[in-house]
Image (cartoon, rainbow, N blue to C red; front, side):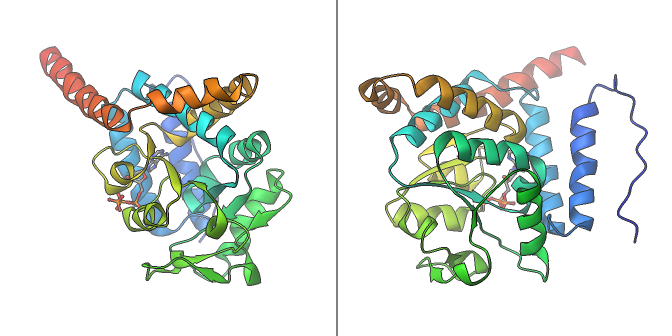
Length: 259
Ligand code: ATP
């Protein structure tokens, strides 16, 4: 089957960006970076993005700022990369890694042949120099997990004090929290288990949230540690989750009046 798809979407289409991303994800699926189930996850994300107005809302901005602060205070932060995140924003992940000093570690749920290599290439093409969790380096295990996601790099997730797990599944998030790690996620679905288990849950699209996080990291770097700590102390993840659900409710109420 051909991997190339001819696109004819006019740039002034109201959902141009979302449609371009959708087709890029399909391309990523042909190239093995994205698993077929990853396309379903992307579709679920799109639906929640639509409900929240396809923008970074103030509750997401608060979480992004707290995440940047947590990265700056962590001793051994790690960025966990799956197929969807590698396809959606490879350069953004590399830039975040450079800004925070946190290594990139590939962690996959579906380990089809050639997939790890495809993701490694995607990240290297985007400028990544070293990538954890590849080949023989995948030799430590996370307790309490049965899927392939229990396999981790002993230099990375295993010893990390902070793990950034965008677009994650609930079981693994729970296992990382149980191991005593600080967990940050990005997930457009505030009802799913991951954002409910994580310490900092960014309810926003990865493609908007990561560039904003890099901006905050570079800005907050200039502050004294005590001020960075204050941002974390004042952060309330439960309130962020409540506000995101209320946003959906309010928007649906508004839209119902337009009909
Ligand atoms: P859980 O196990 O946490 O209940 P789930 O079964 O929904 O969640 P997955 O399908 O593994 O778990 O998670 C993918 C999540 O990522 C979904 O909640 C989806 O809404 C979200 N998502 C998909 N695409 C994006 C994106 N571009 N930006 C942010 N979130 C996204």
